[in-house]
Every structure is written in C-alpha cells, then in structure tokens.
Image 1 (cartoon, rainbow, N blue to C red):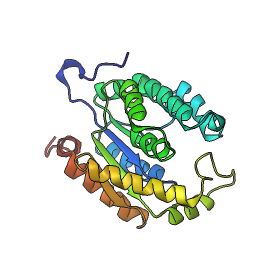
Image 2 (cartoon, rainbow, N blue to C red):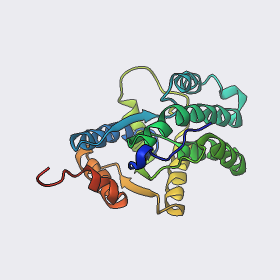
Image 3 (tube, one colour):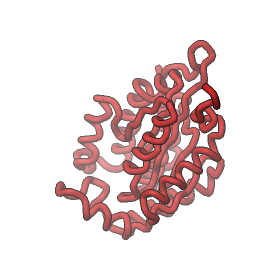
Length: 230
C-alpha cells in the first residue's frame, strides 16, 4: 500500500520533479545542479533514479540494464520496471513527499511509456501498470532534456569504460524514435512538461532548468527563498 500523500501536521507537501530524455542527455548532471541549488536555499532534497532508488529496485535495475530480461520481451521488461517503480514509490518517493522533501528523479513513468511503448508494448497495458505502480503519486514537473540521438550517443561513447547497457546499444533509429516520443509527450502534457535544449553547455542548461522550476512551481521557489530579515 502506497503511503499517504498528505503531509503531517498540515505542513507543505514535497514536490516530485522528474528528468527525462534520451541517452547522454545530461540528466544526472542537471539533477546534481538543481539539488545543489535547492540545498543551498535550505530546501530538503532527495536525489534518486529509475529503475532503482531502493535495494529491491536496484536489484531489478541490474537485471534490466544487463539485458537479463531482454529475451522475455518488452512486455516482461515493462512488468519488471513497474515492480521496481512500485517499491520505489512506496518506500522512498511517497514518504519523502509526505515529509515536505523535494524529490528529483532520474527517469520515471515517461521513460517506460517511451522505451517500452516504442518497442511495441500496448499503451493500455502501460497505463494500467502505471496506475498500479504509482498509487496516486504523479510528477509535479517533468524536465525533458532534449538532444539529437547522435549527440547523446556520442556523449555516451565518451564515458568511462564498461560498454553500453541494454538500451544504449540499440540502433540510432530507435534512439531517435524515443526522442520524438518524449517530445510528443511534452506536447500532449504541456502543463506538466518543459522541454530544455540540452545541446547547450551545462551552465546554460542548469539555468533553463531552474527557470522551469521557478516558473512552474512558484510556491516551491517561494518556499526556497529566504525571508528578508529572518
């Protein structure tokens, strides 16, 4: 059972900000930048990722990214992602939101819609798994870091040794299809999503991310601003 989202003693509920985009879009870097900015303002922040974030979900992550479930098909992978997400939400995200904490998550439900959706998993099945896994938790803001697939894959290739994971090694055509799927989600859910050009340098991207947080979550930005004379 997912934890209640009401904050104790009438305190402000936290905010869930998810970061999405293709491989090499810079999600980890920008989450770290935003976390540092919020922490400097006295805002409690939790950084997490999907799949992962809890011991059980991290175990599922290792199986998925190593390709251990690939032979079972994309629908089976979607089930594993949903199982990991349910544990993540129940044990980490929902309690943190109840405690008034900002949760910054590297990938969330949109990645499942995009990666498993473009692989042919029916949208109604993905929607059903999403409802079950989330238990009422939804992102307050989603930042979609957009880069052409070729740019993102070049960045991935420049990382430390270890080789591509289950999804990084897919053909560039699949990566570009995923990019277009993320942009389609942004158009369909413009009230939740902000697309940021992630081909710019990291500082410019960080500034754009902060503007999105400030503009889309004004109550959160206000809470982060120290009161004069306090």
